[in-house]
Every structure is written in structure tokens, then in C-alpha cells.
Length: 71
Image (cartoon, rainbow, N blue to C red; front, top):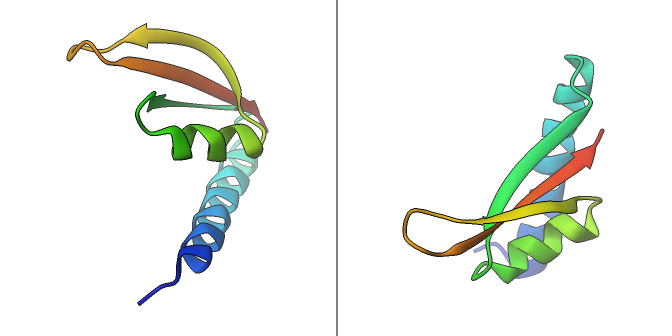
């Protein structure tokens, strides 16, 4: 069983690896989306340098945030 703190550290490491790969391949910005009901993911992204650049309502009528981070 993976403890919650270990899961968080693992997610951060994967996220950092993905961003490093994007940098090496010339990307300057990463964009993602999350639903309002997934607040933990929203907060995680905000804590790691993402900015909210927009919102929209998806096909199910649920609000979503568009987040972006400069690499």
C-alpha cells in the first residue's frame, strides 16, 4: 500500500519529469484542464505554478478550469 504522502511525492516527480521532457523538446507552455469538483487537483496545479487562464462548461454541464504554466 502506498501512503498518501508518498502518492503526492510520486505525482510531483512524474509531473516534473513530464515538464522536463516538454522543455527538452522545445515547449514553452503546458496547458491542462480540471473540473471544479476535483478541487485537490486544482489546488495541486496552482501550488505548482499553474495559473487559471479561463473557464468553460463541459458537455455534461459541469464547470471546468483551464490552467497554464510557463516552462
